[in-house]
Length: 216
Image 1 (cartoon, rainbow, N blue to C red):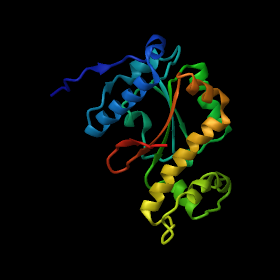
Image 2 (spheres, rainbow, N blue to C red):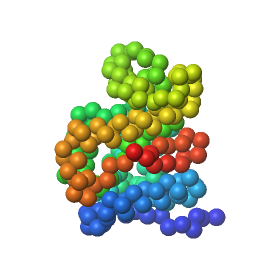
Image 3 (spheres, rainbow, N blue to C red):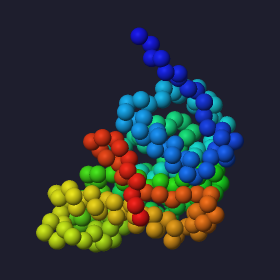
């Protein structure tokens, strides 16, 4: 029996992007995640969307996610081609290349939200907890160690095998990433101060697919 839901071939236009406020974009992302969790995702004609987006893009948000293959970012927020800028790096850490990419997405193209998305059972966070050293990965993990050091209350078990501790460190890593964005990018900081951008953090639950905002 054919699916009764309409298959969309549209992509976000400049006019639609400009009409959205940062708060509206966050609402759309939250609603999209609810559809993903419920298994009620939008059916899209990706071939048509590729053609429609060929001459330009007007995404509504920038999402910084971990490298982890289990987090399909566009699916998680029920978004399609042209809806999101997605940056990926192990441990969703901040560096100059990520900041420059965010500045392009927001100041040049007009995205209204920067969302840093951490997750449970993060291998990079576990590596930072264990002080792993491996080639270039060593330097990346060092940037997560401030989050490890900031979490208190787990003096009896501060290891990567203790999932409550790993979860708290992952949340703190998101918070420190938000602080670093504001501290190291005057461009994004000013857009947020003007009300043209929201910079927020969230955690992805592996078992359910639910995205929960991280309070600062």
